[in-house]
Length: 171
Image 1 (cartoon, rainbow, N blue to C red):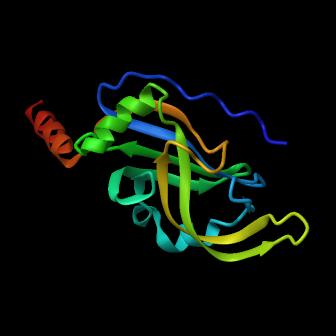
Image 2 (image 1 turned 135 degrees about the vertical axis):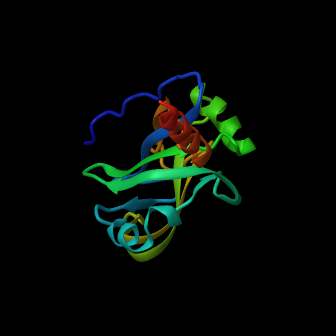
Image 3 (image 1 turned 180 degrees about the horizontal axis):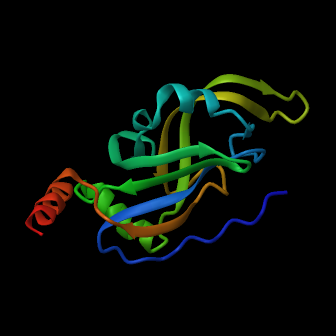
């Protein structure tokens, strides 16, 4: 039995939008009858690295909308924390949609490396996956894969860092 998940926060955006939540839950069966097992992401997170796992909209490779700042396994599943990019039109739209709770799904795009189908239940247990991307989606296959927090975070773009350095130098 998993602990209840906190509900998604509603926030108005004044800057960059941070999103976080579980992209996958261990031991939960999704609508495709797949069940991700603990440790399934370990290898790919170590070998691929954070910057090579894009944040997409609806699994569309032509729709990158932000960057993942943290992807990690914990006792519950794959925790994802990232930032939508407001300079990208779809990222700006998602800030509004996610902030209002209109879209709150997370979903993983992957290739199965090691899995086994239980002949009785027809549930495929995934023991190792090659994680390609994590998307913000309207309809996640796994009901519990949701954005749980949306908040404003300070801008970290090079342009703003440079402005901060100029301001600091003037002091």
